[in-house]
Length: 179
Image (cartoon, rainbow, N blue to C red):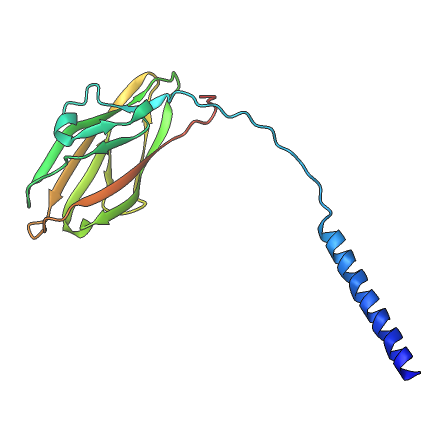
């Protein structure tokens, strides 16, 4: 008799556990689907880098990427304990009719940055110290105009021969613009 009672309690317990598991699984599987429909298409950049008018582009090893949205300088160099100035390594052009607010920000640095006395990027009247991550400057480019980018660098007298890599971001405010 006790075996039948124990078996009945066991069956009730198993039934209860299975029911709980089924309810938990069913509850977790109930959800609503909502959709977002977006059209995404490439456009031509209205603010871009160009070497047109950049008189020191060759000396700086300036390469502008496709669409003018990327630029690299592969030959920036200078003597130890002497400032080297590249007047116009690249030009930032605004082909839009509206004035654009821009921010130039140091994204990353690597190599022997401590060997540099100075690595400045000058845009208009603003100068960016590019040796410190997150340093930034803000400047405006009027519609249908451009600004020159100047680079000034100086290695410390005690600098080794190790290269430095600096990555900058040009952030263009496109508020109110469909381009």
